[in-house]
Image (cartoon, rainbow, N blue to C red):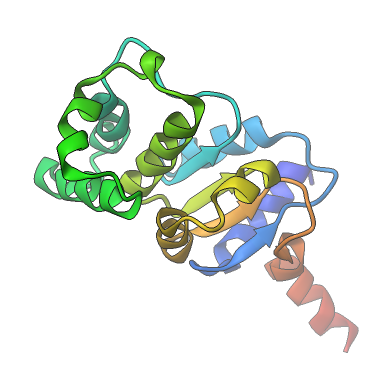
Length: 179
């Protein structure tokens, strides 16, 4: 089995609110993201240091369109998640409308990262793929904590979290066979 197949086999045993570490040799994060997205559209968010906001869309569109596209909830519910996300980021109400109406190109890197995190929260994915450096930045944020509580967090590299393949149904079967 390939690395990606091993990971896909282990995922059904994972629990939301828990943090799992992908195998150190996994180098196919993009392929894993595509596979998960193909099997369950909209079920996975990727939090990487690369800027992933579309510069020609307003912030509001960047936040809400992925969840709308995958029909995760009605627009009113998504709008409520936007408000919740902005509150968890401590963005004052007077700043919200101008921010949501702006284009990402005029925002600093800190604000862009916050908005990428907000988009993931709004999408309410089952799985969150996250780079260790991203996690270092976000781990103390209430918005990250809310997202991590509702999702299976998969860390791409690093030493945090339970090794994913330790929860694999195949590994459980191997352990039973040895006894």
